[in-house]
Length: 310
Image (cartoon, rainbow, N blue to C red; front, side, top):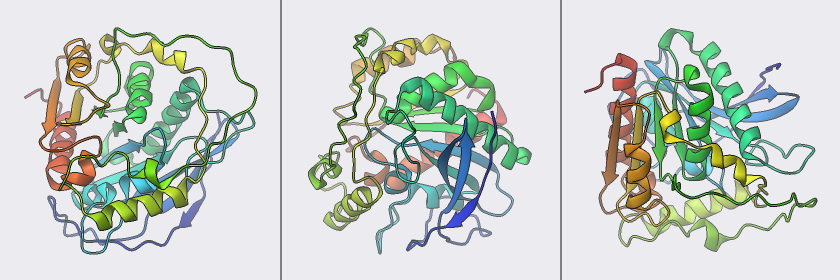
């Protein structure tokens, strides 16, 4: 497996952040790296303060890629998860999976769970090489990305310090049927309605922020990525996770029901675990209550780095 990197700068309007500020951090545009895995370019976005205290790799959800999900810029609002984590001293990376954002589809035209896990593992190795002084990175997955992160942690737990499962839409008692591969992807056009669909709790996010998210999402991901072989997620097994794990979700998240989360949490193979509910939030809790959300992420990342289980 050969990894190559090239660097580009992407212009963006940046907001200041206020969670555990690092005086050495200055707001900056995300930097785009291309990590080539098995001959295919993977886009990895970076925000990195001088002398970082740790590293975190963010994996986006089913429909939208890393920048709209994790680096949303809204004038007068502090909603970028990447900015807040960077100001707290972390080197932050957002990986666009195949077909998303800055990463093109491969020759098959399809994304699959096993291929996604292999790409994330390769990017984790790249992050480890890029930030050797801070130890292994934390792995954070949102929604569908939490499934990819979960499976990555099972197979490549040696590459990460802690696992963070956010809005985890998984019931360990359910199985996904095996269906024949469809030869041609559907390539559905994404819509503004779909981009705004996660914001369901009244009063938790401004109309301006929803408009900004919708615009950023459609700009980055105009065509819906096609997935197949979802039965590969049947390999998900909470008992196979041996690293410290944070389960975090919004109180009213319809995609991550408490009953399913409880099964996952109680069956984790690690006893170093924490379950956090963000009150008055739904599937997009990190945009609805960013300060509280980031404080939980940072607290757990620091605990994992220290190796304590308190």
